[in-house]
Length: 263
Ligand code: G3P
Ligand code: CA
Image (cartoon, rainbow, N blue to C red):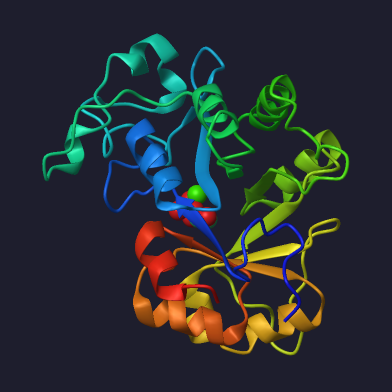
């Protein structure tokens, strides 16, 4: 398989830390992302949501209940209110208390890391905010000079969504950034797997890849890159390597990197 031209290492397979090194640390916290960088992850995955005062924060769920000591929807709380919550201790196992991570803090971390680290950013619930999430995301990226690749360099950022609407908006706002269409659904019977216009990277879930082992070869044959989530188990890593998956998105970047070696 030809090497990914963006690969900064000798490896063919790229490893993305899903919500940071989130098996070991509370997801989406500074500690989780610092660990992922120390572990050697090629990229950091994060979900972004808008607060009530229109700030982007790295939180997966609609509500803060599961991952903090607070309650309520992210969209109903201001960044100041979120800042007073503990997003660390829920994890147990000696996890330290942690602040919510604002998206610009993640951008700061990624751009000041001792080695190049990429970002894979997912937008959630695009219809609710009528495009404001996508606008704010690209505005923040622009402030860091990340809204398009630097001349002669591979893109540092890719944008992901389950929503075709969000991908259309992102394509219009940042036409030079690669897009990933996330999906859990198999293609219709007898139809080739179709990606939205302008999207070259397919992001199937590991359950779908396991259930439909023909999917990855078909996507590759159609010229698409394939980024699979969330690949934590050694047998799933092996399956993805066998199928020629380009990028593994995992909660356990260190273990996956150890398993794949220089493959
Ligand atoms: O990286 C894609 C994956 O994160 C999508 O699912 O629910 O973990 O955001 P979810
Ligand atoms: Ca995600």
